[in-house]
Image (cartoon, rainbow, N blue to C red):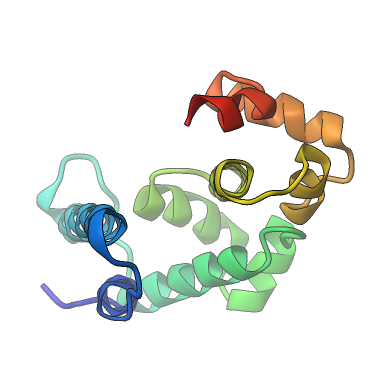
Length: 163
C-alpha cells in the first residue's frame, strides 16, 4: 500500500519532534499508533475490511483536504455545504466518505479536535477556562463547559486537577 499524505505528515511530525526524554517517547508512541490507524483505515478502504465502501483516490485526496481545512479552521469551521464547495466534492459524497475514512462525522471530528485541544490547553497552559473556550471556538464558556463535560465526563476545571 502507498504512503498517503496523511501518513507522511505523521512521519514528518516524528522526524521534527523537538521533545526529549519521556515526552519524546510518549509523542513517538502516539504517532506510531496514529500511523497504525491510518494503515488499517487504508486496508479497510481497499476492501480488505468488512463493510467498507471503496473511495476513489481522487475523492480520498479531497477528504484529506477537508480534514486539513478542518484542522486549520476548527475555531470557525465551514458548514458541510461550504466545505463541500471548498474541496470540490459533492456533500452527499463528503459526509459518508468522511465517516467511512475517519470513523466519525465532520461535526464529530471538529468536536473531538476542539475538545482535545481544549484539554491540552487546560492541562498544560496557564489559561483560564474562559480563555480556552474562546480559543477553541466557543462564544460562551458555559457551552464549552457543557460540551467538555459531555465529551470527557468531567468539568474542565477538574481536568486541570486530575493530571
